[in-house]
Length: 295
Image (cartoon, rainbow, N blue to C red; front, side, top):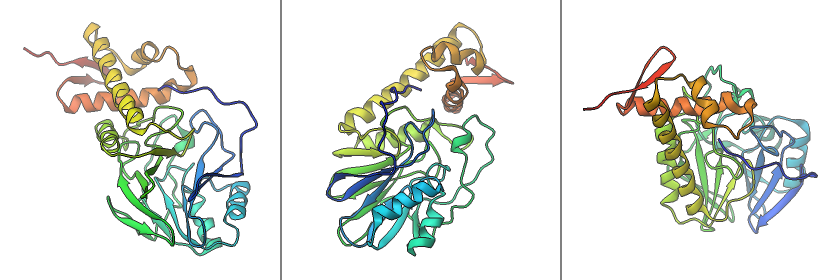
């Protein structure tokens, strides 16, 4: 995984920043090595009947900031890109306050013993309606189209704001770091296919849940696909030298990354290895991975 440095404080936590006529952004106060400066909640719509995307963590200050930003406007829908607990837990209390339905990704809760405690699944998420790929949801001055983008999680959705050319990319594409793809739910083949799916569109800007907006969408998506292919080549090169464990590979592959992030990086390495295993390129015995000899 690669990441940019944290920007200098103060960060605009709790403030409603207008990004374009129909889009405002509110930053939650949950910064970490995995969330950057925090989760960014987006408010879509300029008048009555707005949509709230990724309401974020169930923290009193963030909820109050969202309520203040909403003001007297009616909320038509609360949407979540996926159900990691830095994205969806505020949906239920916000729905209780506004009376708005929770619409979007499917519920998903898995036991996960991985290193990303901040990204465990939200057991409170209960959507009133699940959107399928290509389904649309409209308000008085906006239309959002759901784009199924599995990979980071199997239930991940992005939302395209029609016809502005903006996409709310959740954790599928982030503005500050590559995305962790952590088995058993995270799937590298699905993730790369979902990156290609967005690359093949002609969008103007990505609004991620973490980090700055992406103003060169196709180039950025192409770079992420190239980065994943490079990681795969690194893994195959290392295994060509000798069978190895993930613990042995990660320090060699992530020399410039803080060691506290190596366990999470190892999850993405595992996702690559599982993908290669399914394609008949590698095999494992216990914790040791090796290349499959081809004639």
